[in-house]
Length: 250
Image 1: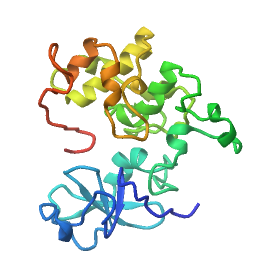
Image 2 (image 1 turned 90 degrees about the vertical axis):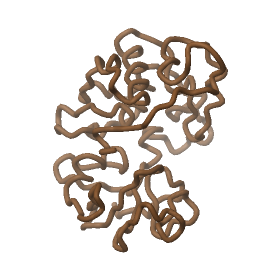
Image 3 (image 1 turned 60 degrees about the vertical axis):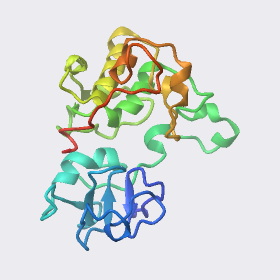
Image 4 (image 1 turned 180 degrees about the horizontal axis):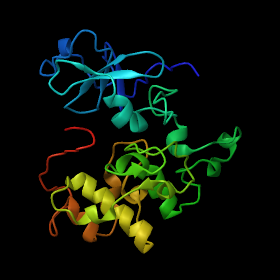
């Protein structure tokens, strides 16, 4: 499959120049990034962003954190599984330069417009909590590792499968106070579902395509809410935190 052009959603990838997707190039106001001229793409929806440049079919070089050199292996070995589609676990090449809709919605029959219950995560599809956590956790359970490939992202997981058959996750991290609140929140919810048969999932509070938190206000408060919110007071007040990730190097 040929490389697809980057999407304009700006969620994972932006093409140069990036005027409409929320990933401005340095000359368009993000001077603090100071990306080199040969950075053809920008990785990341929020700072700190990293530059990317093509290095053959299905391969990208990743700009080092100090912005002075290009790493030929880092993107393939750390990032590709959650920012690209259909990554070859041996060659570390990929077939699409962003996340294809199949990543979250699965293998969809051709007649799905007439029956949206055939599409994973649609309102009419069955809502099995573990399968929902598997779909979201394939990228958001940062720190897991594939048994079959040894890489820090799943080995070609397909929506509807059991993510945890191959992807090893240490759920004790949910109790690690030193973990980023964002990651700890995901680990706590996944543990509740996978180990304790909980029925609250990512979709209970989050919309699939909308960066919108309005659904939070409709959910009854519980212990998991306190990862981000105070025990008392309005939910719109969020605990101060700094997003960080060893996997993503920020």
